[in-house]
Image 1 (cartoon, helix red, strand yellow):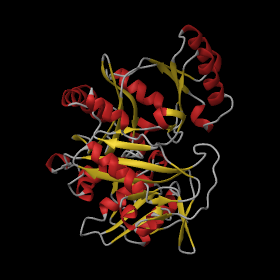
Image 2 (image 1 turned 180 degrees about the vertical axis):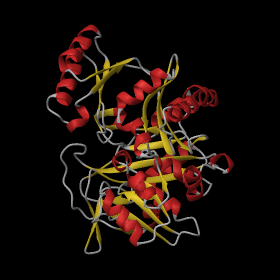
Image 3 (image 1 turned 90 degrees about the vertical axis):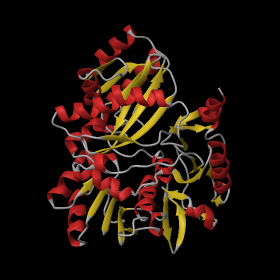
Length: 423
């Protein structure tokens, strides 16, 4: 089989390494890919993740048998619709279903209509009306840009003034472009966060192993929000009892709600959850695999990824085995110092053969055969083991074998989870 993967980050690298395990796969093209992914797939850097017409032409010219659309932007823009219309079956939702992530106002309204537990909220397109609401509802409070913002359009405001500034930055300064023209202001929830990715064919939903992301740039969850500095799986806060409650009150109701709205969702639906004192509630939906959650979830998948993906496309997920290891995984991200703000790039990356086998590359390019840093989050190294303490220790051992100038990583990935296991 000839496969095509849209995207070019660590998530896509993790997918490609998992897809390669299927003996029927003869070649994987990655559009655009990156310098690290080039070790495992044929990268096509001239075709960007949002260049849907070029993707369709490439798929036709190379007789692609199956395509995985990984990032949110092409999904929201209709990549799956266009490729499917061209005769290329895809993993991922159509645009009308991807709106569950592309519009936070849509997803919040969906949850309200179908009684899916989430934070109380209001939606605004007028700045002064938003300010009046904030004055009547003092912080802490959450301000979200309605549209896609690379996972960064959420501000946790401790005070009313911080919240007003967040609204100004989104609606006036357009820090997230048109995504901030509409804002969602919602109740500040408390409790541990859990990420649950799920496979679904629009009828059946099969949750994957739960995970815990580490968004802040610094140790002890200090510093700025990032795309993710590391992940562990499974998340100790996601107990069997919580999992059952989520299936009954969140997962199945969401899939049924989308179908009832004429927006049947197929692919990977990501549930960002908070386990509040009043039970689990939805913080956000994503219409695709998360990054870097994918980098700890897929290494624990024992079933064949391509077979499961095709079952979501074909509507046969109920008849498909989806099995995960009982072990644990830890991913430690090595970033460019200064990320998520200004940082230098272009430094040579060296790593041991063993570290490279466990590395998922995000921000790197090839130049004269050498792998150079080319982004903020450069790569993540994932280790699996029978227990979480072992996985964390091994992930750091392997990460210590990755070197480039200005390299930076958090030293406490997984410590919160270990503390939870002790409690």
